[in-house]
Every structure is written in C-alpha cells, then in structure tokens.
Length: 145
Image (cartoon, rainbow, N blue to C red; front, side, top):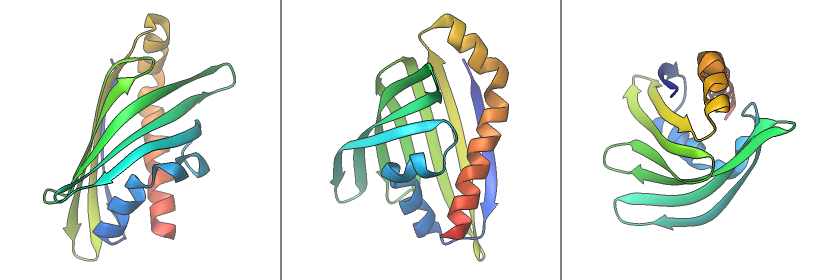
C-alpha cells in the first residue's frame, strides 16, 4: 500500500499549472513509465470539472491500464483522483495549488493498493524513488510551459 506526498514550489502561474495537470492526454509525453492515456469524458460544470480517463503505466511486459475519475474543484483549487477500474484495489490522489508570490506551491499526495500482491510489494519498495521521478518530470515540464 504505497502512500506518499510531495510538495514543490514551481515558478509558474497557478491556473496554468492546474490546466497542465488536467491535460491528461499529454502525460505520455513526459511522465516516466506512462505508456498511453485516453480521456473518455470531460464535463465542465459551474464549480467543477469532471474527467474520466485511462492511464497505461509500466514498462515492457509489466504494464497495466487503470481508469480514474478526476474532479477539479474550482473554488478550492484542488484536484481529486479516485480509481474506478483496473488493477488497483483503490486509489486516492490529491493535488492542491496555492499561489506564493510569483510561484505556486503544489502539494501532491497519493495512496493506492495494487490487486496483485507481488506487484504491490515491488511497488512499495521502489515507490518513493518513482514518485520523485514523476514529480521531477511534472515540475520540469511545467516550468517549460
């Protein structure tokens, strides 16, 4: 059951960062081990944006696709992601954005469990390293926007 969080101060506009995170179609271009993504549905409502999307994560024969429900709460500047299908027992993933001068503080937390017990043990051992690589990829890409 990997669980971790990362906080980064990124030299970028808060709204641009939020839109960047919501642009799931672009994830395979810069996220390590993200093979593909597919957005099935995107609804922009008054106070939230709701996206249903698949991500295929892994390398070689060790890859799988999971479906997520992504909700951006406009008034809270918060994105909440939950698992709705695939190889996970559960997924809780939250993004929070706060303006700090010319920068934006981004807080990312994730908690999940893979159905396959062996893969779950492997993921737990290498998870923090992988999370830092993913956070680095997001930050580098965001600063290039």
